[in-house]
Image 1 (cartoon, rainbow, N blue to C red):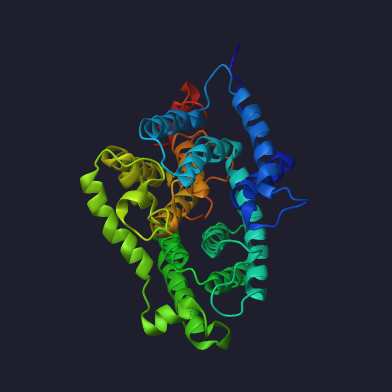
Image 2: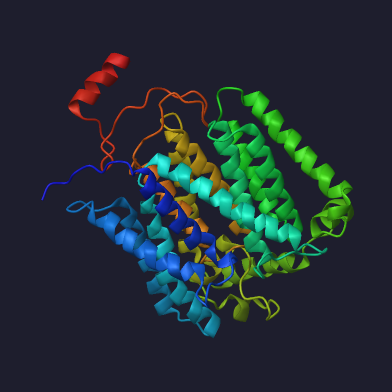
Length: 413
């Protein structure tokens, strides 16, 4: 059997996969339909599409399958040091089912235009969540469709980073960007979640700092936007009773997270091999109502050991560097870099091991880094990475130049 290079998806395929992925990643923030969750339906659809996509690569192996040994190694650790609570057992099961499925689903974004379609679908979904959140805000923390306010804010923060990239790519109009961004920012403020605000800042900085054209103008634009957001939350009556306003005006801090992050380092030093999945709260001495340290990296260090924690950090840094190197070839690399950097910030203040979007973006970053995502954007477009040099065609499976392509590259040089 001979491997046939895959073609970019058509419009129907892009839209269908984008809807499935958005439902898989943030569908839990929407109400159930007939007692069936949106995420459950999306999981079935995603599994079928993943099998189809992997089968198209036969007899070659799709690069996304690199996540299997990573997940498998952690499962072995979970078995060797088993969970001591029902919470830990549930966490273990979620890891090798729903979270693994989410990571594998990154292969559904076969080409770069499919990723842009995914961003647009995410903006529609997060915009709807923002509207519901704002309408339900009565001071304190709004929760949308009775969802976790932190998860709500994280979905909207990701949407803001996506919208900034799309307007820089000239995929949406400036007035559309201003409208959707204002809506999402208001939604985040209504949830009272502060970590996603940091994530938006990191994602925006990643986008504008690696822009070659109009870099200063875009940096000023981000600064003005941040100033406008600060003015709104400290001045407008709508945000008078929000947690964000309390933080900015009174310097209020998060006592619980201070406890988490103070008791975890001694635990890591005392148990370098890890205490086992879901066992952090039993050993750390934190209040029993808290089940994890609200920092994915601290959790991995504490529950799976120093070597696993260090390995995760190395993987994250390597992927970010690889994306940065690819930035001159395609603007999509900077988009994924910004999204991953923002997500790293989010899981560092509120995430746990089964943060789906984090593992999805990790897998997507790897696929973009090894050129498994088919280039389909116009070379030299003014995207997040500025003015790009001509993109040289490459085999999506290997990333190597063919004989004719090497000749063309020498002529360009």
